[in-house]
Length: 88
Image (cartoon, rainbow, N blue to C red):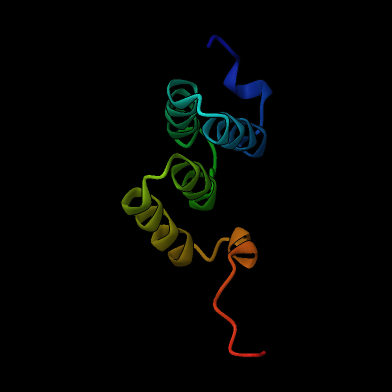
């Protein structure tokens, strides 16, 4: 996948990676993860983005590691994480 990382935002790449993962295109999703990691050397990339891709790939251990990082950085994306509700 040859793309100019500077022309695409992290959210766009993360969305693409998530789409690949839920479409059973594992190698493409893993490629996007690599691109996001590379992009993170140049600019901020939310750990939440990484977690969403790992979750869609079914790699829960990796997803939880990235969610922990997202908590540490107080990622706004955590707003979308559903918790178990006690209300009925």
